[in-house]
Image 1 (tube, helix red, strand yellow):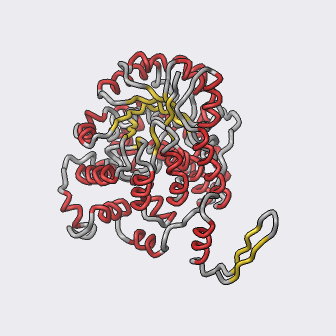
Image 2 (cartoon, one colour):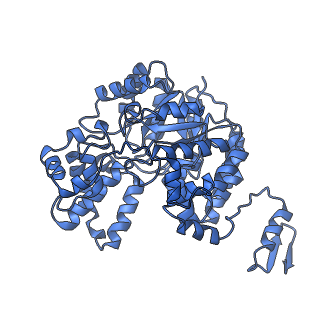
Image 3 (cartoon, one colour):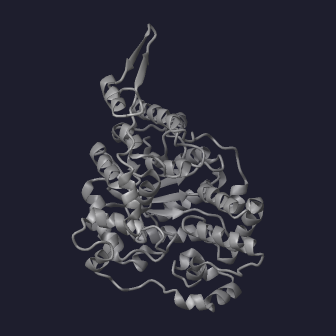
Length: 492
């Protein structure tokens, strides 16, 4: 029996372990190997959030990364996490015209063939955004709808049966169970997968989990026994830890259960070795298995959110109150009707909890996002209909609640939006960069930083390496060592 694999190394692996810090040059070194390794799908980091990270922190032009991946990976279906509200920090979503332009430009490069949508986070996509799925289909994109897993009194077997039916009615190409917190256990997967398969109406079902609690490898093997035939994995060193299970380890375990694949293990190992070398070179974290951690089931906070919380509390001089904040997140989540702890809800819950602890009075100060949550801007699936009624009444009576508008029906023409960022002469690519960064300042800083960093693999020709070194003014001598002797080149 064959098992297919979705590779998450470039996107979720990097996001989980390197804070989305994988550089274009790193991807470039291994892109061809991954393209030819036989993966069913490869996740690529080409969302606006990735653009923002690359421009602001890595000082690299994301369009270079987009075009490089499209050129070097022509054979593989490439996917990203998409939503109608695809642009970062725009709670009600960008204007429809901007969203469509972004998709059109990305798709035209050849870097996108599939869109993965967290369908039970923001409610029924067809009802909220009736234009969205037909638009994606008009671009000939595959549609994968995610059913995000969580634990709460309202996320019962009946809930997942009903949501799977709703997803199937949207006629996606794929439904996948997304365990973003790594909360699935072997016992729970045994009850959940049969429910999803039964209600998927024949649509293929995939599984995506994280190794946060140390159980994902076991869960994957049990899922295979239950009928799942596509697993989401990553390539070491961007596997394990808070990332996905290692594809190499998963392949080995699946083989002993009688499952085969079409993957080229030699190419994957080659990519892994190259990636490990680059990780060591840049002092990046190396993914490793984690011990079982029951606290994940109590707080359900993604690892990246906890990391940011610790940093923010330290800036405020409140690092000694981390446990109080974590305990408060449990109460705030219950107050809000048990939203799934995934972006953006996990950030809302954690931020409000930190404020509650810092002020010494619960909900003395309420962030705008919680107010909009109470207004129902995220639909019933967010949990707002389960909110504590007294808290909801308090929030909706605030003067600020009257100031915050809900989703606007206004369909702003694209040329009007372009006027705010430089006018009609801007190229689409430049306009989208400025729209994502809300101006040109950080884009100029990125361009002033100079060419992006290049990486060389062990197979790079010596002359190519020397040519690269020759362009580095701070290097004046190079020593080449072999078993039989050494050679020193001066003033290269």
